[in-house]
Image (cartoon, rainbow, N blue to C red):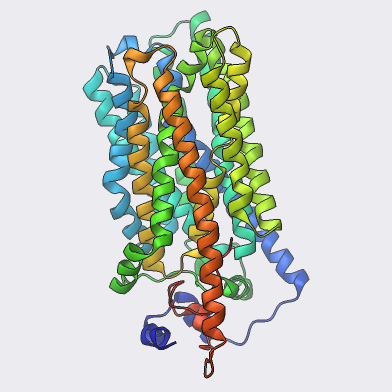
Length: 492
C-alpha cells in the first residue's frame, strides 16, 4: 500500500482524472452504455481494421512480387531475397523504441497517421528499385514507418475499451491481416494476368507496389482527419459522451494516457517476469512468421503448383487466419480466458507443420492444407498483444513493454527468412523443422503465463485481506502500474 501512495500524485495523474474531476459525477444506464459502445465501434474499428489489413498487405507484397519476376528483374541471387525480406525488420527494430516514446509523447492519432502516409509512399518507391541495394534501402524505411502501427493500435484499444471487450476487438483488427492476404492474392493475380494480356511500360510487380502504396497513403490522410487521439477530442461524441467514454473504462485501472516518462515504471518493465515471458513468446513465435510471410508463395510452388496458381492458393490461408483470430478473440472474452483459448490456433499450426514436414511430394493437397492450418498460429500472439492493453498498467510501462514485445518480434522476423536457405530449396526441410520447434516452445511459454497470472492474482487478494488495508480513491486514474496497484486484477 505504501508503494501505491508513493506514486499516487494527483498532479501527475492520468488525463482522465482531470477530465472527470472538472465536472459532475457520471452515471449511465446499461442502455446508454450499449449505445455508446456501438457508436465507438462504428467510428473507431473500421479505420483500425482497414489500416491493419494494409499493414500486412504492404509487408507481404514482396512475397507476391517474388513470383511475379522481381527476383530476376533486379538480379537477386542466393540469399539476397532472404536479406531483402529481413531488412524490413531492421528498420522496424531501429525505430521501435523511439516510435513508442513518441506514441506516448505526441498525439496518438496524428503520429499514427503520419507513419501510415509515409509507409505508403515508401512502398511506391519499392516499384522503382533496380538492384539489391535499392531494395534493401527501401525495405528498411518501410519497416521504420510501420513500427508505430501495432503498438499504437494496442494503445487505442486500451483507451477505448474495457478489459472484457479488448480481446475480441484486438482479434478483429488483427484478423484483417487475413483480409490483407486475401486482397493481396486477388490484386496480385489480377495484375499478373492483366499485364500478361495487355503489356504495360512497367512490370507487373512495379504496378502492384504503386497501386497498393498510393491507396495506403490515401487511407493515412483519412486517418489523420477522422481518428481522435483519445476520448477527450473525439468529435463524434458529445461532451457528456466523452466523459461517459472515460468513466466506462474505470474498471481497467489504467486511464486514457499520461505523457510523462516515469523511470520507476521503466525499471519495473525490465524486471517483471511477465514482460520477459511476453518477449520470449514474441521472439520464438515470429521466427516462423518471418519465414512464412516472405516465402509462402514459393513454398506453395514447391508443393507442385505454378507461380500464378500460388497467388490464388494463398487466399484461403487468409480466410483461415480471420476465422481463427475472431473466434479466439470472441471465445477468450466470453469465457474470460484468452490464453488457453488462444493455444487452439497454435496447436492447429503444429498439426499443419507436421503435415508439411512429414508428407511426401505426392501429397501436394495435404501439404497445402497443412499450410492453411499454420495460418491459425497468430492467435496467441494476438492474445498477448491484447493482454499488453489489459494486463500492463502505467503508461510508461505499457509503452516500454510494447516496445520490448515488438523488438523481439523484429528479431524473430529477421531470423525467420534466414532459416530458408537457398541450398535447401525447393523443399526447405530444415526451415520446416525449425518452425515446428519454435511453435512448441511458444506453447510452453503461454502455459507459463497462465499459471503466473493465477499466482499473482492470489497474492493480490492476500494483500487486500490484510488488516488496515484501504483502497485508494480514484486510484484507477493515478497512472499506477499493474504490480503496485493492489486493486489491479490480471486477466487470463
